[in-house]
Length: 121
Image (tube, rainbow, N blue to C red; front, side, top):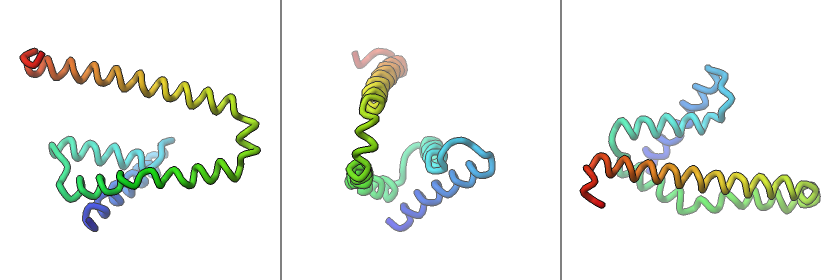
């Protein structure tokens, strides 16, 4: 587990370094996640310890929403003045995420059928 956490933090650090050196307008952890994805894709799979550690972290992912909820409650008056823009942004981003996910799923299904010669239909 320590090795897997070190790997995850190493990729985050690599992302921070890339962002700093190239002055990219993207958060370092996002670049680190892309680097991790590319290396796992090139490898073909994730090592078992890394997979287990990531699964364990994702089980407690909902805890990351607690600070955001507390922030909303602390600044409720400020947020209440911006209800409509927030509501529109949340609904639009949700609709966009659903649409992109559906299109990606359709594309992946077509790719799978093309790779298997439509034998699974």
